[in-house]
Structures are given as structure tokens and as C-alpha cells.
Image (cartoon, rainbow, N blue to C red; front, side):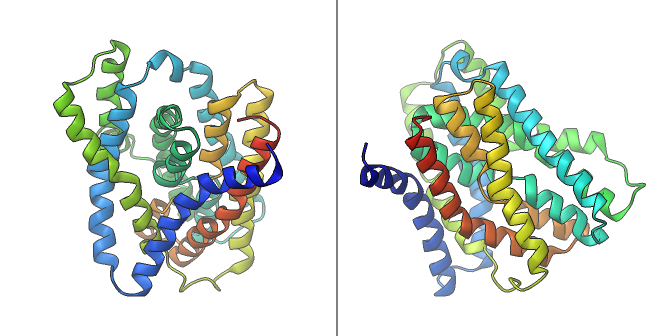
Length: 317
């Protein structure tokens, strides 16, 4: 594959995803959509369409090929270690209380459910969707627990996690419910009737386009000058340091092909938009959170393109 073919391959993965993000930005700029639309559409995505997409992906897949213990264990350890290193480093440099948790969360928490999953699907099709669904299922609850810990303990050392509430929140999450329902069906290789699956497919098909437009429509550029140095440090860690560390470790541990590609794409995705809501609810520096989300989303167009290009050049995917 020559240079131009490799560039076309990279563009075929990144451009369809980011074109929808930019459409969302343009629609908001033209005042065709507003925050109310984005909030309602996002609710539909996260509570209905995305769970249905996860369910459909898993029930069609041989679970023994995607739910490898090594993959699940590696993803969880990578997420935890990235949090731990960032937390200890941020505490060492004595960041302000309202910025400590924001910085840590921004540096390790990826947008797995939308952008990470979209890249896995675009790059690898159905196998990428299946592997991405498993990674999403095991890492998202861990992200939530670690993020709450970072944000609450940054404000108060005496803060304690409400474990019953966290467990209830995780088990009632529509994504987790859909995945738990799909796993037994995938294990026994049983699918719902064709007419049911066809309706599921119609609903699932709207998930990523609508979600990506919502990502664009939800980006805020009004605070891009707030705490620039710290924000850029978080961007560097999230888009460069973390993907290189996770990708290099995954390669060293023997992951290849779809698994290696999905691990890198998931961890190289920009900071999760949900982190802004969590920061604002707990009383952190939400302007800084919005700043980092906007920067990582836009810059990841280039960093993810470079990552995919290098993976292709070295025949790792």
C-alpha cells in the first residue's frame, strides 16, 4: 500500500466521524439546533439508541472471540493506572482544589460510548463494534467510580464514596442493562426473531450519526482562554501520552489486529463530554472542563489520524 492509499485509508476512518461532529458545530452556529435539542437528543442516544446498538452488536457475535479475559483485564488495568498516575502527579504539583479533579478526569476519561465506538466501527466494522462494546461495558463503570473519587476528594479529603448509590447507578445504566441482557443470548447463540432484530437495527442505525451531531452541538468554545497552560497539559496527556503508553503496553502484551486497534482508538479518543456535567454538579471548574473537551475533540482529528496511519504503516491493523 503506497503513501496515498494509506492516507485515503486514514481519511476513510476519521473524516466520516468528524464530518458529523462539524455538522453539529455548524448547525449550532447557524442556530438550527440549541442546547435544548442537544440535551433531548443526547437523552435518546444514551438511554435508548446506544443500548440497542450494543445489544444488537453483542447478540450477533460469538462471545468467546471477543470477551477474552486478557483483553478485559488489560483495559481495566490501563484505565486504573492512567487514573492513579495522573492523580498522584496532580497532587504532587499541588493544583487548586477546583482544578485537581477536573485535570485528572480530563486526562484519563475517554469518550468511549460515542467517538471511541464510532472509530472502532468505521475502522473494523462488526468485529470492531463487538470489541468496542465489551471495552465500553467494562471500562465505563470504572471511569464513573474513579471520576467521582477524583472530583469529590479534590474538594474534601474526608469525602467518601456512596457505594450503594454507585452500584445502583451502574446496574440501572441502560448501557449496562443492554449488555447484560445480550451476553447470555450471545453465549447460547440465540437471536430474537428476524422481525424484532429488523426493528432493533433501524433504531441502532441512528445512534452514531445523531450522537456525533450532538457532540458537535454541545461543544463550548466560550472558555478557551481559561487556564490555557493547564488545559493544554491535559490535552497532551489525553491525546498523546496516554494512547502511546496504552498502545505500547498492549503491543508488548501481544495484542494485535482488531483488539490492538480498538484499545488504541478507545484510549486515544477525546475527553468524554459527560465529564462536564459531572464537574458542574460537584462544583469543580466547569469552564476548564468545557475548554478541555472542546480542545481534545478538535485536536483528536489530527492525533487519531496519525495513530491510525502509523498502525497501518507498521501493519498492526
